[in-house]
Length: 474
Image (cartoon, rainbow, N blue to C red):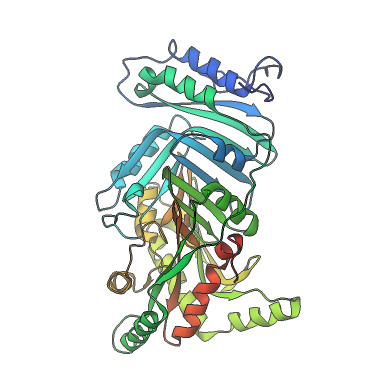
């Protein structure tokens, strides 16, 4: 056990801090170990209803990326807020809600939130597929939806760090010895995670540029004949490497490259992971307060302030982009209006200015009705026209007919659910890593006025962050 860490014990019934242990006496690992040993006498073994117990120990600074990379568990995850106020790295599974079947997980998500009632600070992390269909082979490890309550977490909030162990009783009574062994096996590297990637040995695009052009021209023709106004068509760029990539190293480099995004990493099993660095919030809920964001229209940042200002004005006055953005804003407003007692929507688009790009942006926020659940929010908000199209059902059907691949979790809701709050981002600017093969996904909103060449170039620009951290020319 690592004695470098300062620990704080918690009273298991009152959930309040007591006097801290001296660092030379007890590390956070030893602290959690001691708390687990006390549990067998404090939790009724015959209890039929599941009960979550969350054990915490304070710690000094931990490099979350090197810690995550060093652990031996199959299941790993990372969540980083867009405002950089908090990061969570986690391994193992205390409780899982997973399904391969098609359909929306209303009851299963309610099951998660019932379990969380006793521990408001605990969270289930995970995501859903873009479509409620059975996954193909590549996406099978992720299921139709997967949400995990981690076994062990390292949580950073500002300058504060803590080590957490989640236990679910009565299920974990028979596993306490193995859980203590897993706890003792946690390692805390003293050096940052470093490394580089070999250049890929191949790349292919699905669809290729010629097939892409045909699809865009077909859509433009369809727009002029039917009540279909926008379709977000995606491409998949598949890179093969001479050896497997380190997924956590790729995550770390993206985190450093894209500081103004939500960062998400989900590894359901060794060798397979989904990684996203996305600027787009689907919604955030704090109690009954709901915030969603309409984001559409993309331009790269200028090389100098004067050029940046010109690009910003062009985007703010682009008839095509404003029309595309209005579809997104209108759809989110209409979706939330039935679930809210009051709702406010920005009437004009402003700019979301990121490190490398700018987007048209509008806030939609309000107060939820008392009986609204997170499953209700996900059902009505996903997919927004920013990743599907408008009208939604017609656009999603068109996507299924035109795209030659399974989107999986790309463009799906990814994030976390707590007892009193939730946060979901949209899984764009993302990739599926399967050992030595990295598939990058990105889409472009096709509306009247789009051209195949411009939309192809926009997608290349959107995947450029991944390409840059891989050492490829952009």
